[in-house]
Length: 171
Image (cartoon, rainbow, N blue to C red):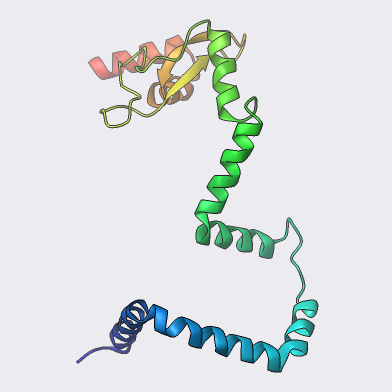
């Protein structure tokens, strides 16, 4: 005995297979039905479109709409991003990385300078390599993985706390 959800899922799967199999035969029928409906209800459809409120750019409705649109059309978003990035090469993450490498005076390596973890996809590592700097002076310290960077941050960049942590681990 099937539940209602299982029966519905079977029916949906059957209809999907049927439409795929008979796509060419069904296309003119669906188009004709749509055209007939438009001819019969043109004024009503246009009036309904005019009354439909457009969500404001920062409203909750717009954010939900934008999210669903991006999920339905990922290829359009990627294409527009590629076009933007080619027209504006000095913006975004590429620019940030170039600025960091210039401040460091050397390119970003593939391995962490503390633990040696790899940043290369497919190799075992601790996440991406980060630009580590002193928060007081802003001076560059080195290229370390995100885990080591977080560990230093949690220790508040204080060598005394790190020494206490080492003593705790060794005891």
